[in-house]
Length: 389
Image 1 (cartoon, rainbow, N blue to C red):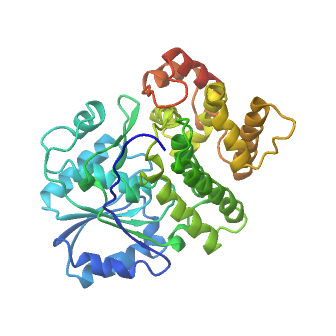
Image 2 (cartoon, rainbow, N blue to C red):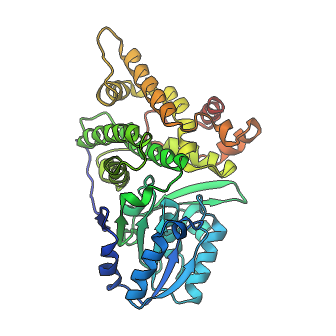
Image 3 (spheres, rainbow, N blue to C red):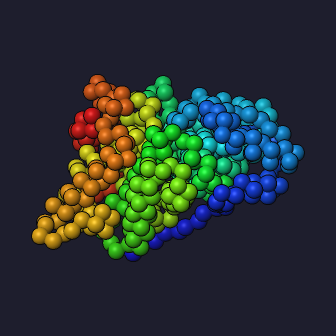
């Protein structure tokens, strides 16, 4: 394992089907006025909203409602959240929902006491917070993004069709705590469940497909990938299988809490391509990743052949006997494709509403990173996007 690194994770996790009882303990440590953040209202139908509000009222909190967070939080919504927080002198942000709610809460938290526009400061100039950060907590209802235990947040600007993520270096951006009850994910529609599952897998791949040294992080990644594959095949048959859903939820957290990126360059071009496409289609994040994955990996495979060979044998169990390295690597990607089709994730951008006349704009919105096996040119991005249609 080569390279030098540091590792810090400031988030406290409570996991299991009785995890919400610890919200009472946490609320005793934070301020009086709570901005309660949630999405389209599903938590009011499944009882989670009432359970959370009960705990807040037990602790004599003033509750400030901030609902309607969309699956791809927008610049305007963040500005609205900042206004709500300022007008009510909010002390704490509690996100109840999936990764989008967690991302949104973090974006608001670093903007409340900042005079600059959050989109320009954090997502165009990629600056770090320079003001006091209002603390965040999460009650998770969807497994996928890992936002509950990292300092990242993705935001979309509909006017420019740009969708960018920013992983902040300041550990104060991270949620102070996260409540993870696998049963809270049961009510998700099938499409959202498999989108989250694929998001988890893609997060692991983005870190795995980089570097050439013998790295402990890669061994951990392989175990996580096999866990996702195994549990997903159970969950798509029985979405209320607690063991499968708990394994998926736990793997999602470890896929993106920075542990498996230690000692790695990391790639993240699938996310750059997928997010850029999302800026034009407003499609579900995991589905945009699925749509560009195979064209991208087939393109870079020759440049990272040994890792793709290892992916095939160690993750998918491809028998290498009598096969060339290239044949083994291709068999691994074929196995990945079969699994994706079994899940029912989107296999092309056109299924998400992307059209050929959007390609140039999507390419313009794709950030070019250098951590993968083949740094791309803009022309190569265009070709991969065309293959993804």
